Image 1 (tube, rainbow, N blue to C red):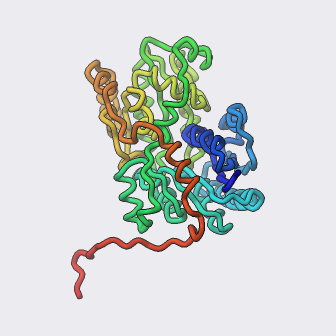
Image 2 (cartoon, rainbow, N blue to C red; image 1 turned 120 degrees about the horizontal axis):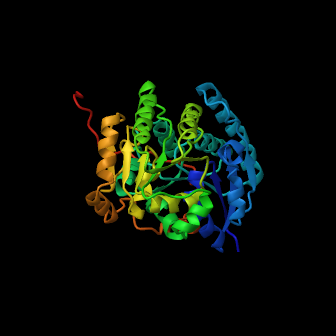
Image 3 (cartoon, rainbow, N blue to C red; image 1 turned 90 degrees about the vertical axis):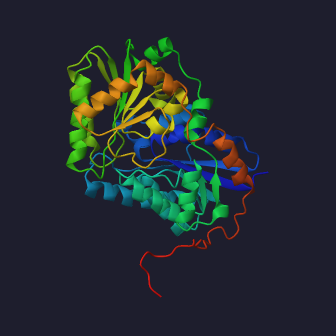
Length: 394
């Protein structure tokens, strides 16, 4: 007998890749009823119409929330957030879930969280407490934490940070990272099958490149991208596979530069969306993950693949020994890439331990969702910690 309806909102290929296993666990639970809201980039042909992947995986989409994502200016993104607030409010009004689950830190997630608070729907937030100092996602993530009642965090340091923000310790659950779960659940393609799925071959050496807008970096973000492309231009014998960015402010210019870069180079391949299986399979077979995406920190370590993390977008996240950080300058990127491709570092990456756990996060979350009391969950006492202001006088 179903006791509670759990609604999962997904807005991008990236968060769906992490949420898919959790959604499967919720669907299998006799005590939970799964509801799905697909929104944002999932519904855009520009970003691959990835809602089709959700349905291809056997899930029914209960509600769709459309956002206008063609214009990536700050004003237009603010307008998309307003669309999201209205759309999520309407979806929640129709679905009447007992709890809404949100993952991460995007502007659409903040809109969904705000709608839930106004609708009186309790929130469970996944991957809170993390830091990405080089992106405005940092602010969105912490804002969603304060709007949420339940917190499913990936590491002890993140649990402490959520409590530091005033959340009750008994509502913070250390479950591990869903990225590790995704790798364990997803059968990966071998080289031949992956080449067929990609529509092009792989090389003797393969670089997987993912670059997202550095939304707080200003012009230095553009300079870092140009530095990366200048280094990639030198590597004519390597195969370079690029995945295009998400719908953050400034993504159109990045998409244009990457497509322009690839147009005249036979060894460079661009994909709008690879989907989880192809992306993880490629990450496993690649010699290095290069760029500023969180996947280089969350998932690549579990696959034994080195990561060259460029710039400040991911500054503050926990790192495995397989991650090399460098500044967004050609010489720094070149040196880090050469080190990552060395035999010694390849061996180091193969032995690295992922700080986001060893898997099983989805199962732990479902047990909590099945049993956690929902009565009075919306009432949020503030958890004070002992703190003395430096220089304070009585």
